[in-house]
Length: 124
Image (cartoon, rainbow, N blue to C red):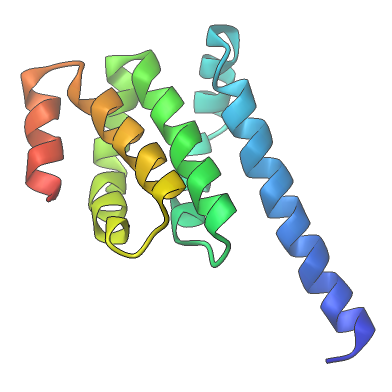
């Protein structure tokens, strides 16, 4: 592959990594949650759970867990965006860091209500 083409792909990976790590960091602060939600962060993070780079998958799961942990509405959003089946499906193939982040998402969703806990159970 030519150097110019390779550089484009390296830049793309670096941008995805920076984006998902920054979102995960921002999701730690309650004052950022509404802005992240209004920006459509759930729809942006979901495809990153299937990224080819494991660290991007892990950071996406961590960000989703932090968002779901914040409020019941965001936990419901995780369920409505079909994130749970994706997480459960990937568990058997991933490293322990991803599994830890995925378990955090599942716990964060389940803690809010019996209905959300049932959604976690139904996901697998």
